[in-house]
Length: 274
Image 1 (cartoon, one colour):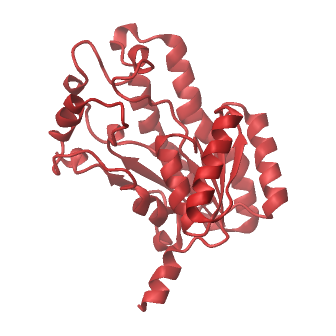
Image 2: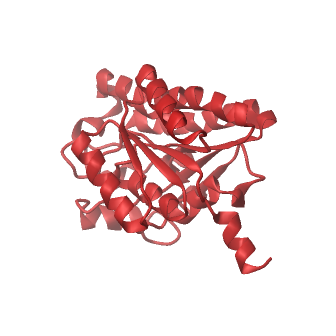
């Protein structure tokens, strides 16, 4: 295969991509690589409009290609329908949906305290919210976008899962009295079932559905102690570096994965194999 053909396989030129949770830590990275690969990227996020605009400008500046950002709550199906309709009217198609939105605050952050509670004391209101955002949100977005792809008889859906869906969590790395959110583990495991169900349902329409299961990538506020504890659990002895998941996301969204559906791509430093 010639170099030009290889590059073509990974090209996202003029493909319309919706990414939920697009202003988040990983969402921005996915949006950036797909935008650079030529896609017309549309971010759905419930962040304030100022955050959406900052994200749009930053990524557009880096790639030189414009990016759209829309305020959307993935737990609100009417908002999703309205936003998707607007995207379709503007672009005439929807090629890729990346279900990335999730509640997963950085370890050592203030936000994580209630979410890292002992399981017998896990707050029911947080459980309900995590299920709604992480799992039901992916279902709602897929329900709204899938009919467009079915009509086109082409499309790609990537559901972002996690390494916690594939291997038991060693809670000792979080510190005494802290435990990885039980709701997060449940939703990310559920994402794998959601992926297989929709892949089977949409296969006859030439619409592919896969899951991506990344390991830990530390935000700036994560302590060095946690980095070392987490790193000791996998085969590479480190956490993922910024932008290290971009190649996997581009692979899943592009024609490079054209014969892959109903599957999962795990990229976790080998933690799920230990």
